View 1 (tube, rainbow, N blue to C red):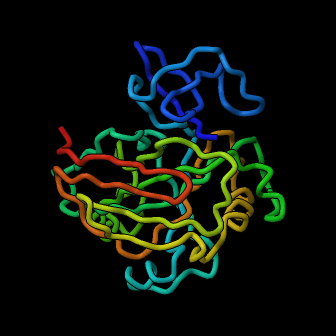
View 2: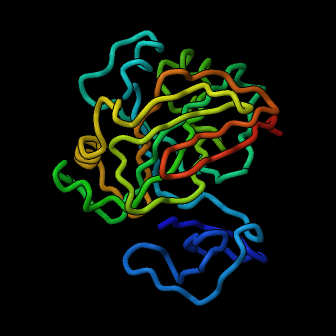
View 3: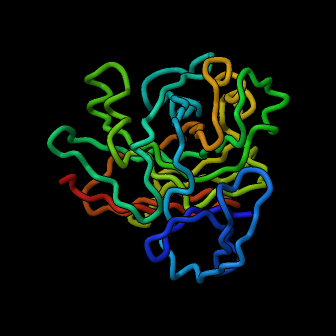
Length: 254
């Protein structure tokens, strides 16, 4: 099942993508999905970020080769940081390059985990019970600010720096999926989720020991090697096998 959040004629709804159409559902998609009977052609709606999370928790250096390309070894425990909810945008929305503040903005394609229920202190063995689904994500990063600040909040937190979508795929096995990032059609990252150092159950256990997770919260699982710069005018796509493709263009921040 592919869950979307979409706009049509000024109204915003959740829906389920079926072939080339969207079947609207009532309220939120957690629990039993209730269809309204309204259906739209997919081409006639605007897809939004499939979820507006209360928080986005991201994992740093969770692929060994990426840790090495960043000049360090992989951490023994998950390295967590946060991105504000205001950084989240949907498919086809623009990534705003803050040229007055940064001269190096990078793409980081990632698998996103969407939490489906309120939870805390979740053991790894029960992690599947709290997962709603999965999406593509791009942990956009002002790399020069990350190096300058010595911590990551500013570099990771700009508005538009967390593209998410194009939908939430429910019922997929995330343990070994191909993940690629392309810039202007050229492959820049190409890996598999089986290369994660800390797997998804481990991440959920670790994060939920720290904070309560709410339905719709996002955990970004880390990016593979091959991160690199974006320029104004670029088109960046994150492709994840069995999930879909998330594409965004880069524009100058007004």
